[in-house]
Length: 151
Image (cartoon, rainbow, N blue to C red; front, top):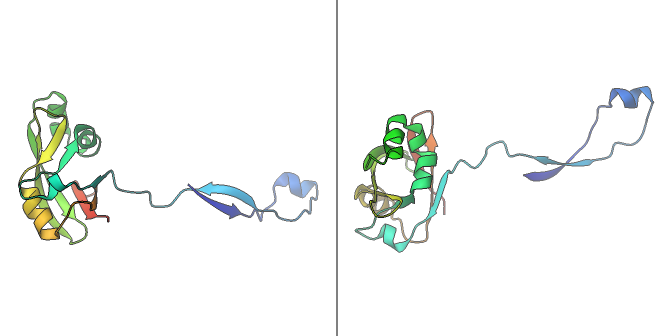
């Protein structure tokens, strides 16, 4: 939250009745930003995720909390550990293009990894390198994942 100064220009009924003519003194209050940080997932890209055979890996908790909860059929199957993969449309906000990413469940780890389309559609096209920070969030209006390079 952001700290700011607030002046009360209207008197309360009690102050008016008591004819309290004191100076207006500022009060320190907390305000919330109007637009909250939309990025549900922020990730610092590792060298493994941007090399030719690399895959973007996201922990199961992130996927369940951000993507799968908006796709009820897939969420049920993932909860029952039946599902191995699902496709998601991704809107690249920086270039205003739409792509499809396939997420695969790693059997030996508790992660979801993207298929080779991650390299073709994002790493090569956007010239992503290790150390860049990406952000993703689910857009309720169009039911797709939004992607952007943050740093």
